[in-house]
Length: 271
Ligand code: DGL
Image (tube, rainbow, N blue to C red; front, top):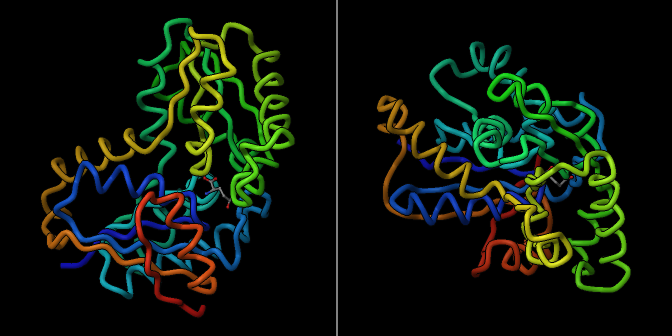
């Protein structure tokens, strides 16, 4: 038995981890942030895949049987290849899950107008993963995407409350709504964006809902563990939480506590 691994390129996955842990507190968790090589959002397919596979292997080596890619970019660019090509060879009894499919599964039920918008990194938008996944579950829903390349650096530098930061955010939201004024549901398809959710709600008309993924992913994981008792039995249950980062731990701990909303004391890993 071992902890549930939660991987992100950096800090953003901590928003997902917080929701997972709130709904499934009994399990042990091992969070890995590849902060030294983040952001992933602007990197090529091959690079995101290589880095993600390396991180998954690291979490497997540390005893995880189940790993959640709590990063949209990694889920978009690496998950399918890891599930289909790598797992059967390197760890046939272990599992890796992402954040895009669970979000796409519920999006159709959240929109009344049947028009949804996705805000995400350039990598996630270009991969078209949300469009492809949503087509499977809710083909009647029209989806438009907007990449927001400045949001991750703005949020990481704590500038999202500044006038300049707000202007970037407003501009991308405006571009999304211009693509489809019938949008009534906007999914935050990047793990950093929950930090600007309340600002988005304050600038959007009331009939548009802003959805973050944390609770959706937590519910989907809970359901997965019920449906897969063989995997659930592999997950240890002492309620513990450990953090790993490829960055300097002082830098990580300070910023991570903002995303996680609680104290963080990480261990450094060298690739
Ligand atoms: N965690 C990434 C995501 O959800 C955002 C940060 C990055 O670009 O590395 O897409």
